[in-house]
Length: 350
Image (tube, rainbow, N blue to C red; front, side, top):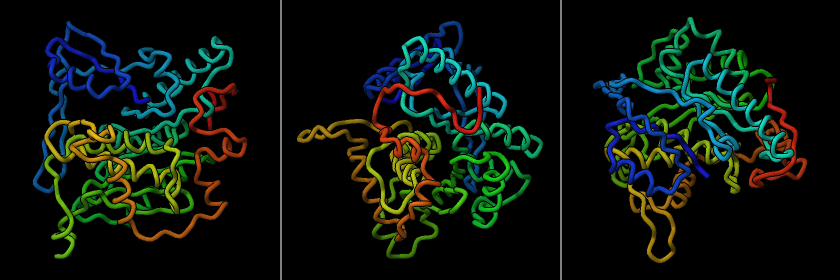
């Protein structure tokens, strides 16, 4: 189940509400008629860099707004400052503990996975100590390249991605903040794809459509290019990433985080194909869910086949890279919805 909260201001377009409802998600509309709907403006520079501003007053989603179903989510994608990240994680875990006791011990079998996307204003050198503190509370941090470089006070041309610099900065986050737990740094690189960093290995993964400026003539002829507008691709990537962490099918040679990144890349590929959201439909024969007329799993298979050959992970690497190794050892599946377990958040206590 995918769920979210949507604040409807006085000017919220009804056609958008109808489209959201057609997706058949767990949507909680909250009417706020005394204010305008939160709106933002993306401005793209010639070099691909983006500036973003809010054009109306924004409203924060508070953990108290989560009903019991949403509170039991397997993962949470947080977009906020370090201070707010810490408070939101604490509030969610505190409420889950309280509800667990009230329900007689029913709780999802694993603590939720927290994926944190720091807001751009927090990606400054003076915020580093707060960022390190917030990493103790989450499992994944995912800045884009510009945010990562600004966090460390570096200046990298976004059109010339330096893998060595990305690796160095990712390593600093891995070793200075997360502590001794299974974690990952996922750097979103736009048309270059993403960079997945874990303590024992780093890999670069291309975007589904790739960077056409770096393709050879044969690739340009054979690879389709349906990219229209990149707005929302980063959010879609992390949404697909969160879903991919819990898919029962595993991709050979990839860690949980790397496999989840393939889902994120495919999710983002649908979002960039038009202005606005992709269109949902169903295959008339199989009733398979389609987006822009294509199946997500078919696109996932195609994308994975294009990835470079991978050597099998050793048992030690699997244990080190898996968020769920301890539960698997106990015979608990990530697909089980409710079992009786004591909440034991990884890496911190609340």
